[in-house]
Image (tube, rainbow, N blue to C red; front, side):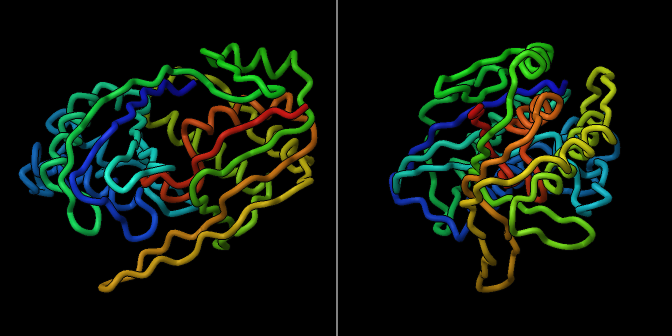
Length: 292
């Protein structure tokens, strides 16, 4: 439904890399800084239209605003490092739709980041390797790895497999806001609503082929999903010396039960798109495990 291209970057620094709080914040900032220096001369007036500045679409200067979260909808996300040694780490960048055409800009920006430095000490680094992830929907089904390579196969799997119980592992802080209220628990109907809105906004941004989404029916079905086990925790406020940047949300495991026959394709799509606020910084990343 929304074509995706993901690159994973393996990097190494001679000195320990440390971040203040959630690393996706610094990595997203470093990517934007490198793109600005390399291609716009750090001049914000440079971008006039997508035709004159191919990075306009990627860097969100004129992209749509999510009316619920008041966040800019971006056609890419940082896949922040989940595990890192002091000098080695891996992070990814996913590009959606036509943003995939800007891959050369992104790879050159990461190279420039190595010269500019990242982290609290502006550590310089070398790029050891770049790997392209296959454009597949990844999940776990009855303790076996499952690879589904198209939206059609996702829908078919959901229709012909009776799924009544799933586990969602929120890998990074997930910030969900509804009615101007921050939700610190993973209520299925609430975050699934935000996910559908994200899918609709990205479809309009990425020029994806038209596929009708039965939003009202899906939301009604989502309201009938129940939480049976919630082991999530709250990720709190990060304070800096000069300012405060709020990355607040839940992370960890939660199990749901109900009829997922129509919902599962969108949940699996969300594995690649992320959900909630600050997705461009790597927040709202999760994986799905089908239990029954």
